Amino acid sequence: MIGTILWAIIGGAVIGFLARLILPGRQNISVVATVVVGIIAAFVGGLIATWLGVGRTSGVDWIRHAIQIVLAIIGVYITARVSSHHGRSTDATAR
Image (cartoon, rainbow, N blue to C red; front, side, top):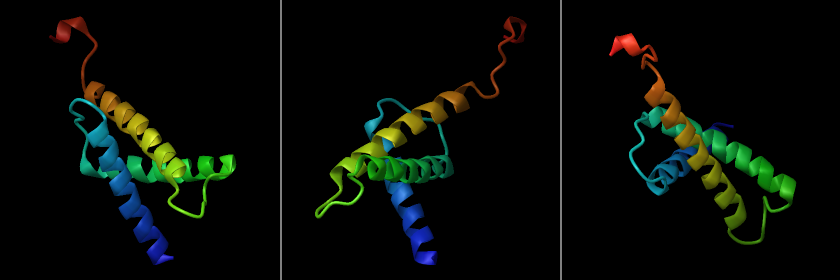
């Protein structure tokens, strides 16, 4: 159980950081947010890959990993956009 949780965190961190490397531009989000997005993307991507029948193969699960990374890129992009607008005032008089 502990090993599964540990591997989920490590795998999520790797997937999250790969997404940040692939996504162009600067993402102003924390390391914790990157890891959380990576963990969620790894979990959901694994479910989608299993549903498509490519979750477990005899070799490296390239399609599953590609799905996970694409989901992480989308998640990092959304998180960066939301956090960049968080705290900004939309009132024109606040400028």
